[in-house]
Length: 151
Image (cartoon, rainbow, N blue to C red; front, top):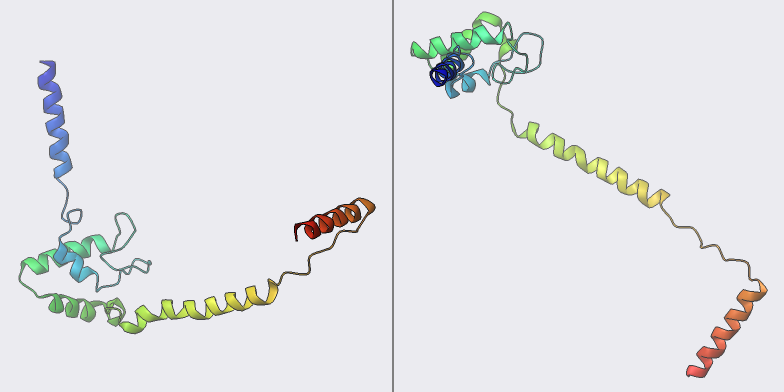
């Protein structure tokens, strides 16, 4: 009897976990269209990448996109509908080559500045010579004598 209860409990939890709404199980098609539309909740993300949990703007719009796709509308038609409804500020175009090159091109002046700074301020100074006391003079003479014997 105890085993039956635990099995039923596990089954109930599994069914509840699977009973998620449409926005939790986002399809690739919804995310593809959502990546081209900006979220208007105040964040700077798109519908596909909005990081707000239960976003008041994205959640119903994703469900709407899924319904429009189920009705047979193309991606571009859905995007045009959103532009017509919310204005051109909702549209996010794909990044072009300039958008990919700028971050890497910004590294070049930074590396140049780093190289200039290191070259200018990292110059080793002269090695300080210890004061020659009587013991050091005696050791130096002994070294010179032994070196002369080697030849």
